[in-house]
View 1 (tube, rainbow, N blue to C red):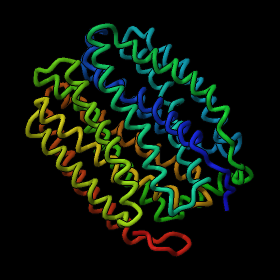
View 2: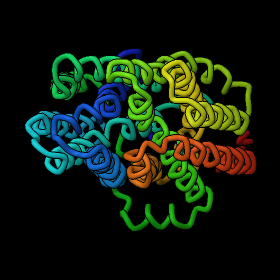
View 3: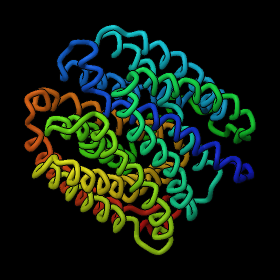
Length: 393
């Protein structure tokens, strides 16, 4: 059994802040892709691919930081990676081409990748299973605020000042948070002596763990991929960078409003039903954007993707903390890694279609993927039972 440490309102606030800063950096990119391409005098596909490097590095480094946190501590890992991310973020503002920007963004993603998984592992180690989804839904408020502020402000700053400003702000926030995290209690490192090979072996032999990782990979390709391309899709329909950024802010607002509701529903609603709710919202969102990329329709689509994230992703996150407690750090890290690897694959694979303006085909494909994901994930969760034998919902 993993040791528990007393949790306070301050601890929850610091974890939400970690989620906020990491999310702000990530979601500042989509509204500025076109502006960055213009400044570099480069094609949109080259800038989309450079952004994909961020997601790829974000995904690949998850297991590394998860294993590191077992050895040096969750809080120390968060503080170290936030400081490194601040340096890489500022370095990216000196880029002069998609290639150099992609390198800097890749290093930034590799460092920021520790924040949210570490927060999830922290909750898994300190919060009892019956209360965990509510706490994870609370963590999503940090994600929601970061998403909304980044989406709303990045486009405006890119149009009226420079695309570099949001990243400079992110770097400053990362430094301040690394200092503030000194006040967060460090949970006992009960998995510190466990050989890496043992953890990997347990995950590999666990069919439920493999299923969760596959599902979140698909979710990354479908949900995050669909969200990342909303701003370019709206701009391709004739909207300005500012309007495109404001459209995606609806996503963050929707997560902010839906996350507490999902947290309350989780106490009396089977998790498989929450997954269905999220899948339906995601499918409808993609259908709307496939039909029209006008700002009004895109706002509705972005908001529905936010509802999907709050309902389906929080359910999969909670499942990841429960599915293999003895290897929780590795499972949660692989979970986050699979999510962003899926996002990178999804974004890069449709880069040429986006360059050609074929957004309708992209979003019809995403709608089909969301539908299949919902069926498979809800059925898998309904059939699963927690290790202690309690019903999974």
